[in-house]
Image (tube, rainbow, N blue to C red; front, side):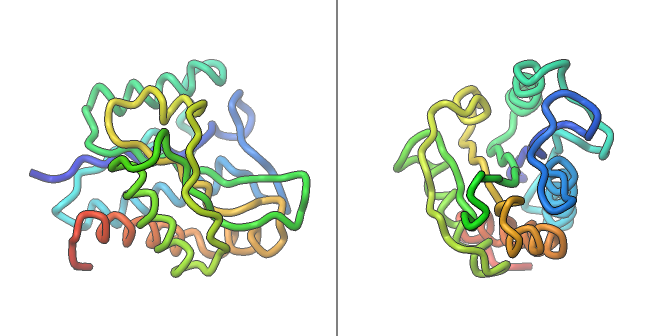
Length: 191
């Protein structure tokens, strides 16, 4: 039985509600779309996984406002039902010096928490971002309402020039880092 991974590419296309952060000419929703698409390709090529995307095309729009957009992502994952949920985001901060990768979970010492640690470690080793740790956040809707282990990956900061450069040029490597993290979590060999 293939492991069912639901990839949620954070935010909606430019021009709609629930669009993401912007920095250095980059739009969060474009980065999350592409990193998710690369991750889906990697997983689809690996018979141990089955995959679905929240945004199968760059112009897929989910919901009519922030709340319904988040609810639709969770509904799609829960109704499949997915075994694991990975939400992909890019971060921003008013302080341009803040940089690095962090992964959010609903609570510590859970399957999601252990998966988050592997994903974080592999992104950091693949893309050479700063390791900001696995963080607990009980307010994120997609972590709170999913019926399976769920992680929210903040790839790097659009507001930091070095991170923005990585988000522009290393989208495949970010996806590959997440993929390697999944393999490590499941104890799988790289095919």
